[in-house]
Length: 379
Length: 196
Image 1 (cartoon, rainbow over the protein chains, first blue to last red):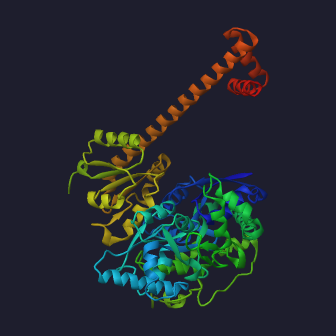
Image 2 (spheres, rainbow over the protein chains, first blue to last red; image 1 turned 90 degrees about the horizontal axis):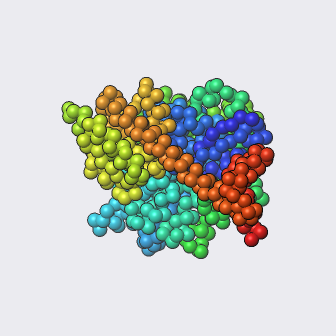
């Protein structure tokens, strides 16, 4: 039996890793996973770097940025497994959301909600009021890029018209209540927590912006992948079996209970259950906003780390001004994702090919990988 | 360039005791501009206002991600800030993370100017962790002492024996059952409560 220390952040999408550790899937591969709950993505990165953790639940863009040495010292990481796709939502302060309802847009569609937010932002500017502040969970995160795309959809320049801050997920609802932020994009179940606390309204689900977007991954240090490839295959197989179990709705009640435990998420099981099922209350006791693709834990090849997803994330990093475009950096970003390790471990799996681009962009600018690689456009 | 001892150092730590220990250590080393702040209220505004050369932050503080994002948004800061400790000094990074502290240093500050600050920080964080462990240990010992005393009293009352005999009985039972005296004492108390 090999013992591996794995870090996670208390989020629903740590489900596959937690299930692998606690429901016998790791054991079946001769691995004992010791879970460590962490308070920041920076800790996850640093502890994997110095070897206090063997691997961790990680943001896809964090794995890319760290490997490229953006924003911090370079930490070469390897991503052999995608823990989930999608799973985020955009929550807006309930007063701002009420104002969005007054400008004649259809809030039930994502482009409509974006247009409405754009009108509110311009209205506030005309009145000489402070710009709105939006929060994501980490600078290099899909949440940042979802928010930017959503804002652009409403004619808002994310770099000039609004402010961006980072707030740890457990403090989102509180920051909204205190007026420090006006909206945020975060993974589940923290949107529902803000709704249940009656401070925010879920404006759009992440899947209504990008329908097939990379989210959390298993990230390990490159030295682990190089030194013990067989062990990594076993770990990937354990995660794949766990992911399959998590995807099955008949296990959601057990999974929600497991995640709700104090040592894991320490939140009510029913809130977690709603996010697993993709049914989110957009207002307290109110309308459901649901999407079968809200959170994808395994099906349609979701666990295979696709290189075009890695390239898309790098393009977002460049577009957000977090790094400058370089052709070799683009290649390096793609090589962080290792579908070859995944294939070697679990064999070929059927993979979905989303339209119109690799993240199934639902509205606004479509990602053109060839043009981006040729340096012709910034996504 | 200002001399090293005038570097502005900010300590972000919700533990007032540890922050005080670290501040004292840095002041002993001659650093005069040391400020302690908690992370809860207006952390970013306060950091902008102080405009520090070095930020030291407890690893268990969730504000690390908030601080790191600030470095990405150049228009928000007066000068670019970046994690200073580079790849060649991985030993220092490792020591700091293991001691439970992270550091951010303004871009362009030379490594040798920061090293004494990091060394002091690492040793003070370690000292604090040791202190805490010793305190926990002492607390546990005290609790165990109390449990054993109570079990002894119960035995004395129930069997009409003196203290020394009662303790001997506990010790013998523990040896025979290959358990700790503390565990035997605890089960006597539990049994007595059940039978009361």
